[in-house]
Image (cartoon, rainbow over all chains, first blue to last red; front, side, top):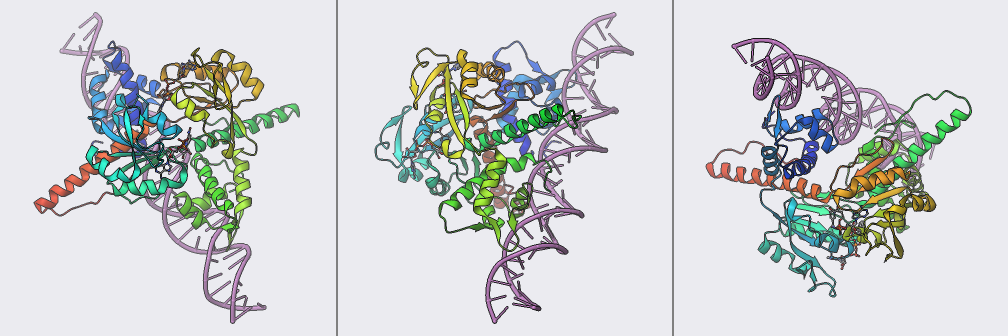
Length: 233
Length: 233
DNA sequence: ACGAGCTTGTGACTTGAATCACAAAGTCCG
DNA sequence: CGGACTTTGTGATTCAAGTCACAAGCTCGT
Ligand SMILES: NC(=O)c1ccc[n+]([C@@H]2O[C@H](COP(=O)([O-])OP(=O)(O)OC[C@H]3O[C@@H](n4cnc5c(N)ncnc54)[C@H](O)[C@@H]3O)[C@@H](O)[C@H]2O)c1
Ligand SMILES: NC(=O)c1ccc[n+]([C@@H]2O[C@H](COP(=O)([O-])OP(=O)(O)OC[C@H]3O[C@@H](n4cnc5c(N)ncnc54)[C@H](O)[C@@H]3O)[C@@H](O)[C@H]2O)c1
């Protein structure tokens, strides 16, 4: 299993295990954890946990489980979180400000190293202890501060432009909060977080379940035997 | 194809198509759109677009494409966005406030109908034109306002409790911003948005690509022929 | 030192999603 | 009206993820 490329789906779950392990490490009572326990905490099934962890190597002990500290270190290392990665936020509106003043990053392997905007009433001001700079200074400051992650929190229209500026500044990892699809060179990774999309997905399942409920209700009233429960998820 | 259950992956893309169609509908020049164009805009491939849309029915015309307005309506209907769904935000800190004062919801099928917190210095204040209520009044107000979606923006510790209160109030759809896994009854759908997880995933690919780059660099200097490019994503 | 009892690690299998590739169905133009 | 040209809709295929199930390996008590 070792040395095989780690599946994307596994990579996406490692941070969840990390979170669970951190909370276990905090109360020092439990030195070791079983795949079953970890699965409970992460909300997945135990076989998946074991398979996921096996991609990192054989870090468990049969009959015992996984050493919490050791596993914690291995996942941290695999995710590249052994030192704090410097990130920049572009767009200091409602969302950008919330992100900039959020204290939770430091404990999770990141630090906000620079802030950018284009609005003259924002540039030069202080947000969460950091001075907002003009977007035009992006490349210089990114180089200077060693920023490796760009967080786009501008309105959707300028998002593409900002992404290009980030790519031009040598940044390879972008997190995009603007509801817009941005195109970047193939060596740049973009992940998108779109709140409206999440809500719309919820809306779909909401209405579907409701439709099923009313259909069942109707057939019950008609005395028709209920065929399929169709719970799913 | 019709009447088959819509795959989860497709549901997750429908909002992206919706967004693209909305921007097409705005400038009224283009009455119809091909799967190829839509694919470009959504950042996916054309075959996937066609297959996704085919789950909703045969709404295209061969040789022409899809009627923008008609498709727009069909997706809106499928997602259950024909009327604004009332949502509630719980936890009015940095993030909760940004969400509450965000104007983009209305245009995307949602409206913020209620706000909740437990902090006495927050309860009773006005945020984005809505008075913050105490969490204890959740059930009453949810019923009264017909809220169907709950958005958790509290710290991680109270997230589980809040989720239970929401479920108890009859809410079936929860969007959770707190970095915590919440357990709910099977008829409730939870989606999680976790910023730190997204950053950690970026970190993984960042460091992996870097590792590949330095390995290639090393082998180049040694004159070893470079075997596999291994771009992926 | 041995057997009962856990728990891991992983091949084999199942399920679901993505991609391919092409016939079917339409448009457009001479 | 017919044939060149588009573009859809969808079986067939490939690829990735999830689940199952069990032998291998460890601990601990006796
Ligand atoms: N606020 C929310 O809760 C929320 C929720 C979901 C999505 N979003 C999305 O996040 C993004 C930001 O939302 P917001 O509410 O903070 O918006 P906002 O309008 O409050 O802030 C946008 C900020 O970006 C700056 N900006 C504009 N163009 C820029 C450019 N070219 N370069 C750099 N900065 C630029 C503006 O000066 C402003 O400060 C939007 O795309 C929005 O759709 C926000
Ligand atoms: N701020 C960000 O940019 C950001 C980014 C990523 C994730 N998050 C997550 O979002 C959540 C909120 O972040 P924040 O920065 O707004 O935190 P915050 O501390 O500023 O606000 C939390 C709010 O929740 C309220 N609260 C606490 N317990 C509650 C309860 N039981 N019921 C109702 N309300 C309660 C508090 O009174 C406070 O108003 C956190 O879980 C955080 O990890 C925030």
